[in-house]
Length: 331
Image (cartoon, rainbow, N blue to C red; front, top):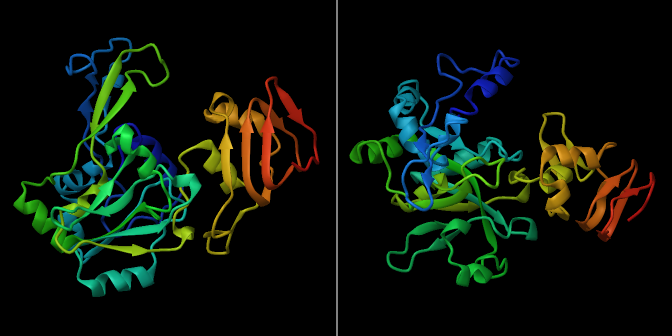
């Protein structure tokens, strides 16, 4: 599923893989879009300088109605595809697994979510919980947690499993539910607070109304969860994640799967200097440091890394002025 923002670039990239298409099935379907709402009036925002910024995708919860409205779910069933594996594009560990596919088909469940052991790197990620009122599984996400409950939410001992957004769907059962609900699912609403122009902090405050694909776990009778290894959850949501994946903690196998330590080091990079990709690349001109011997790497301040840097144990860097770490340094 692409958005109107990502469709052209994605299809251009996929042109290098001419054998990727399966029969007559399309390589993509495009999700809906909705207006951003001004935070103070809740009216659609106007931005004449760049009207495209007035719109936003409604979150990946739009997967279900968009798959239905596009007609693709019917085409998949007509061509003999009953089970579907879905994952976030930024999860480099999300690959189809025949063992999981076999388990899911045998389970008879309409829907299953993969969960994995939670670490400090994803303590703010969503997790599944049992709703007391009806015993159903529900997805709890950061945007749905009140400030007073946040300490409990991020407690990885109390909530030891993180939701990977790797999902297995029985399309026959999914289309039955969608048919009964006019092609939509009633999912919890997420209110995302942003600025109208993401690159301009002075632009008007807006809210984006979104839904999460994993929240559908509460819609389907008999939905299940299954624990999987951390190797199936390698998300790249921040430059800190990218640094770990580029390091010697991970390597590619002959079949292009990423393998590495079961628990990767915890990396925290100062957002003032490393949050944006261009700033990040500028500070690692010779590539990432070795992290194979590190439990953690915490960087506060502006450091530029030389080549052949090695981090060991719990590595900490702090500075108030720009610094360059010499080649060959062990932290």
